[in-house]
Image 1: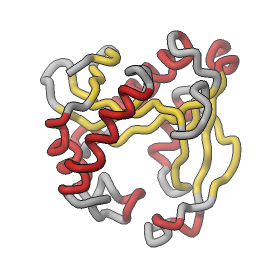
Image 2 (image 1 turned 90 degrees about the horizontal axis):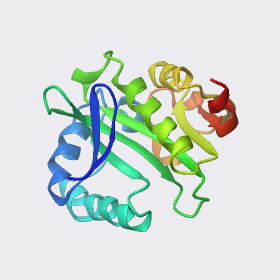
Image 3 (image 1 turned 135 degrees about the vertical axis):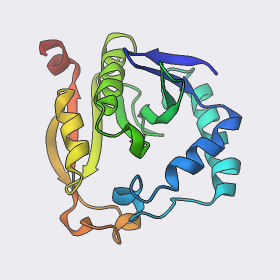
Length: 188
């Protein structure tokens, strides 16, 4: 496993071909998936093993390890707590990247989402030549909104709920796109 980033309590690493079970277990928790799928696992175990993991590995190669979805581990225990992503849209510019995270329920409320997100935003602007970091969340997902605010992001517009999420609680309220620019980050 290749380390991507360290913060005070976390280490982020590239997923490996053996990481499917970590993703499967994370996505099987209804509370974790509440604002994504209404609590259902997002895909079958075979899809995670045969499509998702190969896609993650290919993304590391495509972006020369600079961007992607990274497994998050507690430094003290070595326990997997979830993942963070910092990545451009597939056909988008490399200097506009999405920030995302999904954590095990046991890691909630400990400041890990903010800590990992801060570290990624800092790396994006200070090392990777990023001009904008953005993230989207449902209007009902106040916890995710607070994390984005804590790292200096602010709402730039409302966004409609994607069609594949229309059955999720609160989907009728849509969501928000948050952003922070390099200039805003430099002024923090």
